[in-house]
Image (cartoon, rainbow, N blue to C red; front, top):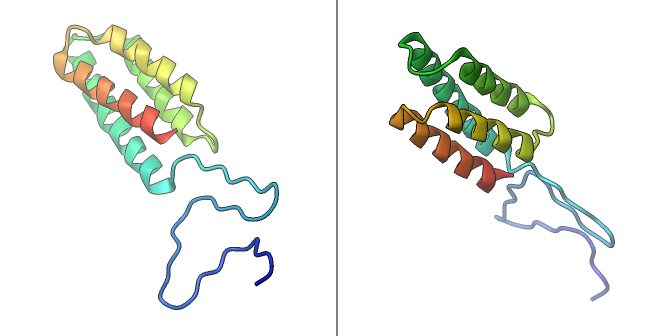
Length: 117
């Protein structure tokens, strides 16, 4: 059999990929998958709701909510920047130290971002 630089899918096989490359010098770059990104965006939406509620009760300052909104905006970009997101989340973490449930939510998000990107 000759050289094969392609991807072959026959019969009952299936391929599920966000990025795929084949052949000499080929590169595939993925931001982690659209479903995973949507899940992360949902997590950020839930965090934002909790931050807004905490702001309303006086637990946190406005700037923490604004930082959460910046995370949401970064995740909407075509190529979200992991370092930017993690830096913003670190800023949120330092602003929610008095609210244990928010600390946990931010820590979980940091882990999700690190795993995704």
